[in-house]
Length: 269
Image (cartoon, rainbow, N blue to C red):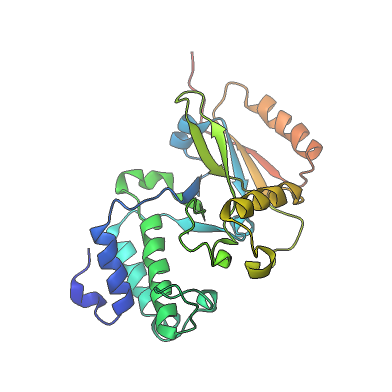
């Protein structure tokens, strides 16, 4: 996709792009993704996933440990995105604040600007790999809500690296009869805070820390999800479904949610 000379001015980006090409079958077991669509009226989506489309306020879905990525279906567009980001000042000349206090490759804490740019470049290439999807799926208009949660802590002495990662849970898959790892997403009534885990986890094993994170998650107050609208798809009982939603939503605490009925006709026997 890239001519090597195009990335020469951005050595850290070039390095991670080359690593990505070598390791295209990279381990994705630390990624947890929920997929959304920008199109609430897609017949293909109704056919594949159900009769009701729930619309969320995307900005309010963002929280610690979860990020949104809008899919790109054209390699030239993702190339353009990488070059624009690589040429921005925060990637080339300065160390982004979010990378301060990370550890260097030898495992020691660092504030070195080059290390910050290196980590930022890794984040850029990682984001590009998450955004890019095959052009055959373009009609999905997908937006991905992604969390990274490491089951293997490469640097157990530096627990702050994993503090924002949601704890991993397991459920039983009825069809494949295997345990399925997942993370829980919810909005909280408590404000999110930046925290230093070096003291609160001092002297504890990784297993103990992970268990503590799961227990803490149970005690967090849940807020209502940022639901803005409901679209009733092509069903044999559209108006009855709309009325059921009008009754259900206030009972669950949701107010001022717009409910619309799709004009797509139902074709059944």
